[in-house]
Each structure stands twice: as C-alpha cells, then as structure tokens.
Image (cartoon, rainbow, N blue to C red; front, side, top):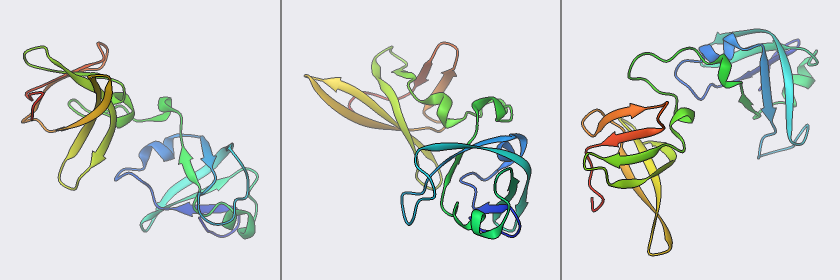
Length: 165
C-alpha cells in the first residue's frame, strides 16, 4: 500500500471491489513478507475509498501521512460479510460455499467444500472426504455443466459427478 496524505493503496483481489467501497470498517492483517507494522488483526475506520488505476485508494482514521500508509503496504484487507453486495441469481460468494456438503444426482456424498480454486476459465470446488480412515480430496468444476443446484440454506450442492471421476 502507498499513497499521499493518509491514503492507503493496493490491488483488489476481486474483479469488482464494490464491497470494499460499501464498508466503513476494514480489518487488516499484516503482510507475511517484509517488515510488519503490527501483529494480528487491526480495525480501520474508512473515511473514503475509491478505485484508482488498478488499485483501491483509501483514507482511513489513524493514518495521517505517507509513512503511516507505507507501513501498511502488502496488508490483507477483510470486510464484514454484511458489507458484501447482494449476489445476483446463480452467483455465489466463495465464503458461502465453504463447508457445504456436495452430493451427486444419485445422492452419493462426495465430500464437503474445503476450498475453491480459480483455474483461469473456471472455478473448481476442492472437496474433502474420508475413505478407509484417510482424509482425501477430489475436485469438481464449479460450472453449470456439472452443478445442478446450490442450496445455501440447506448447505448442499448437487452435482452431475461420480465418486470415481
């Protein structure tokens, strides 16, 4: 992050940083690389945030000069889930899919969503399951050709996928 008087700047990890702009509270975690200005997680109150080139620039309480902003370079920004814009129909936030049970059309449990991977043109669900006492993973493309239904309230994803794929 860098900036002028009290500004912090960095690239968004989203194609649409609107959630950052709508939140007046950002939680920062120190960068894993380079010097750390703080330990753990800190709360920043945001006065102003806007898009600038390929970055997000913000004015926050407690950061009044360039050196204070420079100290935040590389920090990760988190915002409350309540600040996210409402997702469109058939759109899901990754955080909402984590932990959901995945079953196929025949009702066979394939595992729970452990994480999601962006593989370029598509997203892949990484499922965690147990077999013969061993923790294993399987991957299912998160695309309409394979995903029949996402039931967020029921915490279930139904897919056209077999356990032996």
